[in-house]
Amino acid sequence: MALKFCLQDEAPPLIEGMEYDRDQPAPSGYVWMSRYVRNTKEILRKEPLFLIPIMKHIDTSPVTEGHIALSRDWKYYYSSQYIASTEERNAICYKPTTLFWTPRQPPVRLPFSSIFIAVFSPNSQLLCGFTVDRTLERTIYGSFYVVECATRKARRLFPVPKGFSERLGWYPDNLHFWYTCETAGRQKMQVFKCNVLTGKRILLRGELRKQPFQDWDLLDPSYRYTSMTNSQAFAYARNHQVRVRVEPIRGWSDAKPGMAQVYVEWRNGQLQQLIRKGEHQWILIHPKDVSEDGQWVLLLCQNLIKDAEGRESISSDLVAWNTQTKRHYVYSEAAAGWQFVR
Image (cartoon, rainbow, N blue to C red; front, side, top):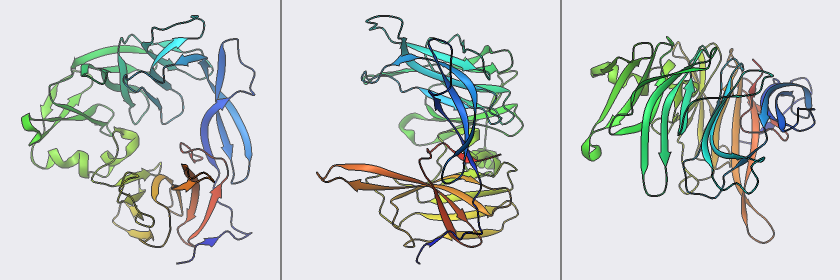
């Protein structure tokens, strides 16, 4: 199928994303992280949100990669990294540092001595996750914690159990989360449900055990850490009534041009296949967003390209698809983390 490009009378939705804004005046030692809004051609407006201290990040030592997350309502942002302040001359000691932001305020340091990998609750009021230290030789887990976003108070729930597989996610009630553990020999996966107020855990069985891998709400990647499930990837509309699904999801070594297929699914069971196998030449497609009426889908489409000397690099396009007309539009110079304006 030949791909159709835009007509003059059809405008794709605006998108928004968060990026460093070095043009925005900031206090000494800080740089703004701003919310940008743009169309396919240019930035339309921006709003400074979070004051980021200028830090020196470790980039060569074999330690745990850090983690960052933005709450669904854009009110909170957190980062857990191995960093050293640029004010420490010749610093060689990089320490796990977890910082937490509210809009237009300097960050607060959270009391974790290890990397904290966490997910914001669906209502953006809690941040829940686990601490970990990892080198090339070993991985040492700490405990599960929950942070109350309004007060930045952290509360320890329980030690990370043996066999923890780094899969976890929220239930839509904002009160419970699930996590998985592997038994000896990795022959069976156990799924637990935890109450964040009491720390009480129960082992899920039967149909309840399948929920984190099948339930409509629980598959929302914004609810979970390690979002891919069974070689599929999803992105949900804000109203949770429609989602976009891409399959199969493969790594660069296994993926082939034209392999990925894209579907639009409604909660009521309605299904539309937007892109079929062989109808495109992208190697990888990642779902990023879908409008509440299902008319627009946002995809990150990637290929490998070679320069004149034969060196390969990744070429990425952020593309909006009209599910009715099948026309698509590329947002110039937009990053992977952008979404439709909510």
